[in-house]
Image (cartoon, rainbow, N blue to C red; front, top):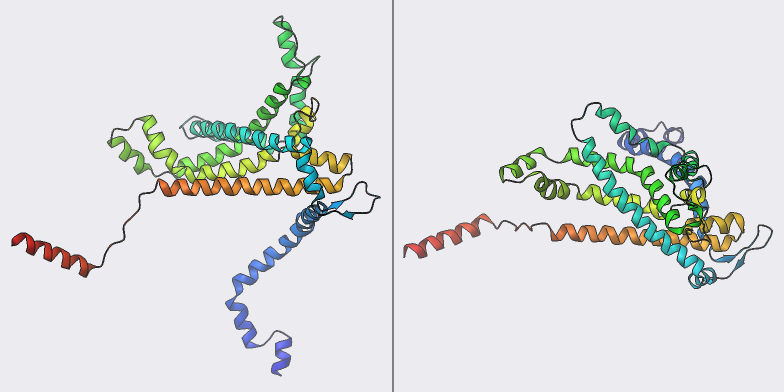
Length: 334
């Protein structure tokens, strides 16, 4: 009977164990299906793409040929890939820096007691939820060489129209402008949450010490926002280094590949040239670069926090302190 009860899940020990681990069972029921979906949709394709980096596979009809690190060696020998990698890093850093500063400025305005501040805060996040395909097409309407809005304004002022697609500077400029416009809303809302979490008593103490508006910002607000800044920098840098859609729809990598970033190169290798092995190797290198940059910045941020933190000396035992105090008092009296 006991064995039958165990098989049917009716045993008292089974029920007690189920009640004891109820939270773990509920968490498993919720998380396991999500993990399986992630594994099928993202996890396995990502791992498969990394494995492809060790094979030579050009064309879907071809047979994969294991070549070890051949694709990785070819990557660093070919300036097309190294230039695209370097462009992704510095362009991602530029976008992150501008987004960080613009988002902080927007958050300061959001934190002011303005009329209709709920609506004002909402409109900043609209670019983040709009379709990239649609908004880049609006940008292209502005940048059209013949009938673009900006060139029409230049013509009305008697200036020569600018062929944006043939200029590396303007191509990079508009990619940065669009990327910042797209990401500043999310950064501003996170900055705003950080601003509202700073203890108000610290501002009062700084005001008593004679600190003005800039003094409060420098000595109270910015140090209190250090963890928020770390999060914003890491998340925005990861996204900015992997810029792809902006390049595809605004410049298409031109002129002559001078605005081509690594993710765009991976797209070309995988879906245009069907060089699946090289696309896999480039993806793995991109992942390593992103992880390395994230770890370096995170460690630097932690070291900076430790340098700026005043160490607290541990309290000694009461007996030792009492003995020292009594002896010192005795010496003074003598």
